[in-house]
Length: 184
Ligand code: SF4
Image 1 (cartoon, rainbow, N blue to C red):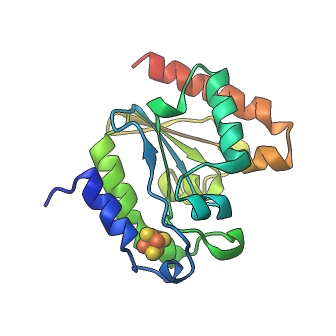
Image 2: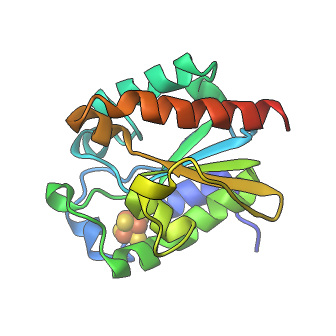
């Protein structure tokens, strides 16, 4: 059976596949253009995202918007989502069983979007999507290719909040992402 975007959203809204359904305030489905060539994947909704049901709100969202703007990209033209659709209490790392339970939703989002470029934000997303031993410090900005889709990773905007000197590093990674997109 082929699911639509609305079907996926409805399943996520009603999902009880892992214990986070009991602690979340709102599930957070991906947002953005369903025609986007660029899919951005982070690890899990923050507390603010949990309150609003929207990915990348708050300070991390402001940084992401600034990065996109500096590279000639716009949030409305991309698709942003998370590995987990529900907030882990205390912002702890997602557990393996939670990632496995939630992964089918990401697969459906990817199947429907068919992105040309996937950018993982942070270690957790990079290790789930690109390689289990991905080292964000050493391998950010590197590329691998699967079925005509380029995959790369960079630091999560929350890492820039903790260390503002990372902004330029992430900006360089996003500039290359923008170049790849422009060349497709
Ligand atoms: S995190 Fe994913 S699998 Fe767990 S309850 Fe939320 S939507 Fe369902």
